[in-house]
Length: 294
Ligand code: SF4
Image 1: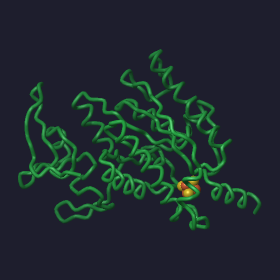
Image 2: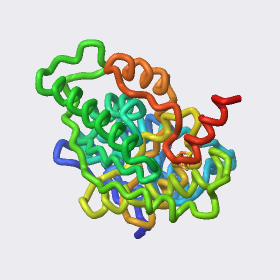
Image 3: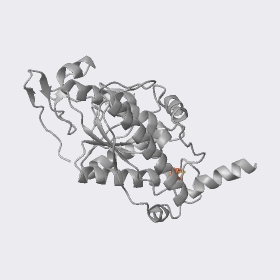
Image 4: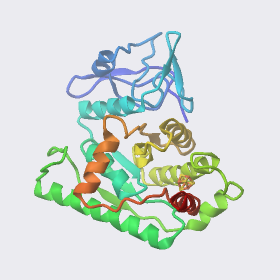
């Protein structure tokens, strides 16, 4: 991935000062916004606060160094900054959102449709039973229809939405559980949250990134970070590595933050969404069955 070696400072047609980040491929950083967050040009290079590098190079892990201080990243704040930047520029970037299920996507979509042209990518070969897969997918599509009807009617009662909310599109993907079974061969007995899940996240994010690049999206991300059971740091790290590999920008996320998980439960109840009691693969389902017997 090419890295800018020089900060380019210029002006938009409206006279707003803009710049390009010197470390990542985010362009047109709004200087006023960057300064308001305390980041100034350093050594002639402006380091953007958009979350792709945040002062770090692509692919780095959870800790960055600002002035010798070790910082833990706040992915939720990083995504907010990207959204602020987009609004600052009057843009609605195209986002490919990997979704695992309707309940998890409910809050993510409510939030993201305010800032992005969102397309949902339901790619989950980890769901190893076709009936379960189809049911979760049908619920996802039903939720999207409900949200789009709100936009058409411009009525958002009880929603955290504004007239800026856009309609949501869907990108189809075939159901292929064999890909997952092959990928996790030898990792069947890993505990939930272990190496098998890392492979599962990578599989799904790689395909999302590939489709995002193929279809010229500006960003891709996943609803998976809304789950308190999933490691947002790990998901963001995989997302960033995958972004580098496919040349499409990763939108950092930690959707559970700011009561995001709580909001997803409220929205699930409001729309009567099916909330499964296991993650998706046969191994996670077996674990739930075993736990219920004890
Ligand atoms: S438990 Fe969930 S994240 Fe882990 S491998 Fe199974 S489906 Fe994937």
